[in-house]
Figure 1 (cartoon, rainbow, N blue to C red):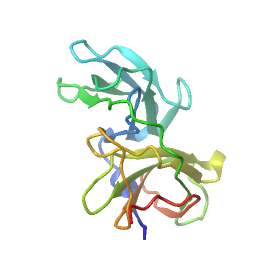
Figure 2: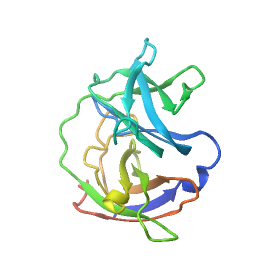
Figure 3: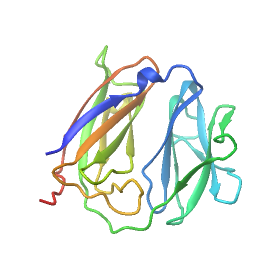
Length: 212
């Protein structure tokens, strides 16, 4: 009763220096930001609590100095239900959202949810090879609810495979757990380097709970 569809951003990442700034995996104590650049560069975040200038640095999750066209940075150790600001830094270019900064609010602390996972793979359509790096972003939708996004890195080191635990998914406002039912569908979005098209396949490794 769960439909999985895919959407590929790769052909759109072609001209501007910075594209597709997306906040994923927001919890009561952390958030992740994903973005792409037209050319490989080092990406970092500068962040702060609301009321201060973002100046605390969060590096790419793959390590300080990581240069790529796909960037993933996570900020941890935050306070529940608190607003934070961040700027996206790509090489020497800082995007501060026209001076307003980007913003995200952490959610409240929720009860620990049981794991509920999918595994999948992403390969380059023209060759069947794993991409050197890409990000998959998953959202869920039911008849009455939308989820906030969660994401995972994939790459050649993993042969294009990824696993995502959807048990901790939150509603779009991040205030409560996303409840799955027989109307739930997933959208899996692949973000990769320019001019590369991805094919994806996915399967459940544990069954989603049903309200029926």
